[in-house]
Length: 245
Length: 294
Image (cartoon, rainbow over the protein chains, first blue to last red):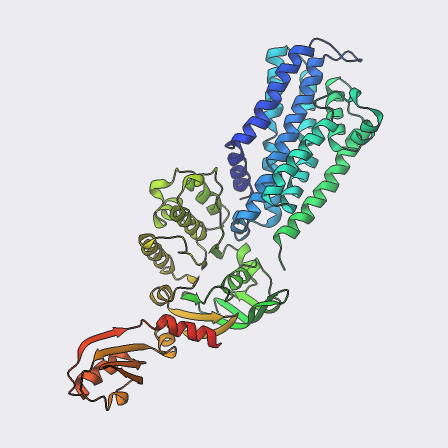
């Protein structure tokens, strides 16, 4: 029954035009534009910008998908009473959260796969199969902190407030992660702030893997730590929002 | 075993006492109306029964279990007051989703037919009228074949025809030996569609019985006719009569048993009765009195 619920959650988001534009079309378009301008250059270690940008845009798409499919839908459902309709079914409340996490994670895959596909087809990007696999798994599992942040925002805020809050968090994390502008452009102050965010380390894991060296342990630890912290926050806020005394 | 038991249940929000020491027992298989004006504590009682709220004092059981356990076992279905649907999902997808969350649901086609949704099964929720959405919410409430069905002012957004069909569907569902509790502030609905009426006002039990008993307790019916110049003596001694009013040759008899009063009027007197009217028109007033007094 958890699967039934998760499938319906995913289906509704796939039918949402805003999701399709921001999450599926935007990253692909941005990749096409940037890769056609800078794609032929390569970074200091010799990795082509068409690969670097692929990772950036896939990471951006994944970040956007994970937050957009979690925060506003949850806030809206709480407000309109749909969540209560689900609460009075036998589905336990941990399963509601698990299904939302699962469906949000599934909805990350289209942007990851599409950006990769466009990179292969249009930019002729070629990586060894195991590197593709590592990259896909890392960028996929690495979105857990962002889904958790989305669920926390959706639990804590009204639907009206969740919309702008999600946008602000999403853009701040995208920029801090260096997904739109290379992190080398950051000043030292900005870099210090960026290094505190999960998105900076999430993107770094992607770039390291694409460059053929394994992810740096600090990056993995920071992303994991944020997953635990934000996951805990989401659990507490969801409980507070749904269990009334 | 009792279906639903409220044992000295109170619920307050801050200083406001929404339910005040309410005790009642509902037998399984009965259809019960929870009647009361707005703010009487109807919705609070239903939310308590679903475990969505916890009582400040007292205990509630459903088939001997705590509400949360009854919900987890799939014994409860409900139509709540604010129950939006997911705009991107179709009627069929929505019903099938909720159905899939229960251990022993009804068949999808049966649910759609019962709620009169077969013709619009493929329509997305964002394109439904208010009445259609309400039917979907009824379908969601019965989808899991719950033994206890709770309806919180279910006909609020419906026109007359939708109401008729809704109540027919509700009776179909209740006929399977299920317990139905519906909240309403319409006396007629309580009267026509329940085996028993529980009147609550300010969170307290104001009256409890069959609709007829409630009516009788609340002042009953009136028999009125034009008396003209005939003598009024003896009218107050007719069976069931509790009060007699005579104004400008028109007599109004308040009675707890209109049948007996009429029989007495025709058989026991030689009066020439014209323009006879039998009414429960003052029921609303009586109901207001009932709920104000408590």
